[in-house]
Length: 171
Image (cartoon, rainbow, N blue to C red; front, side):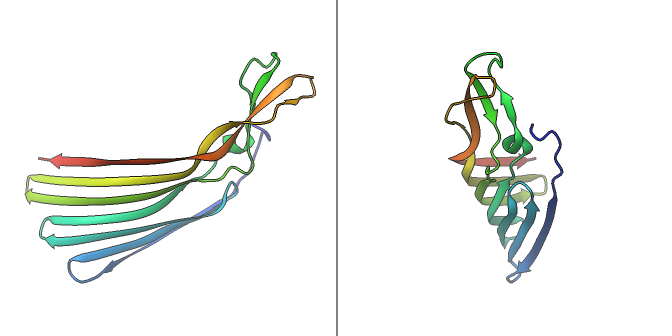
């Protein structure tokens, strides 16, 4: 990596509160606040709601935003990924403008304990990802040794979606 050494700062905090809207509904609001040298200020809020329609039964929903902060590899790497003595040579280069990857997660679920020795927990989820890492070819150039270098840099040009269900049965 270039530079060989790096001193980076990270400041992070978390705030959360739970509010009761009557005896059967709870709302939890929270956020993680962070400032780092890689991507600056990051805001990661979460909203959760639980409804207890009857004893031993909970329906719940949540929306959360999360980030994956860039690393030194994405910012500072400079490595030949083909034969360094060859010509041309492919070189993986860091990107100072690489941004945090983003996730917005949506979840709903049902927890039910029909017996003291039997419980079910069903969760459905949908995750929306943006600014995911991609490797992109740059404009070839001639280095100081006279070799043609094909630069490959990390960018945030992809997105993705995941969805599914999880079922936990305890007996």
